[in-house]
Image (cartoon, rainbow, N blue to C red; front, side, top):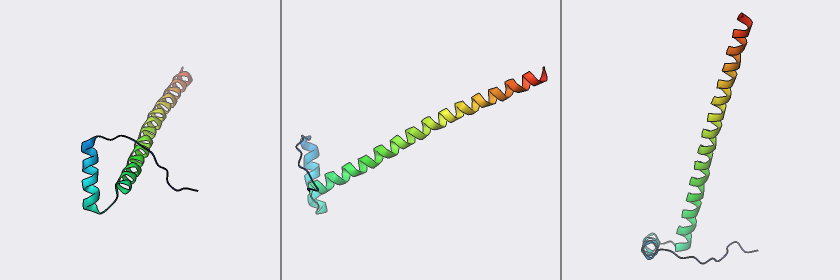
Length: 81
């Protein structure tokens, strides 16, 4: 079973030039740098998705708590009538 696959893509020439220069300076391959970049970006996307999910959950929780508070208020009014 292969651990890697080959894919073909296009990239802006200036970005490829920078990648080539950085790979040479850092004694690493372009593949290593691209793979590391994709891994870091994947982690960033996962963290952003989690942040958005927690924000949505927090918003829903606050709405639910507000609903509970209104129900308590209504019950208090009804028992005092």
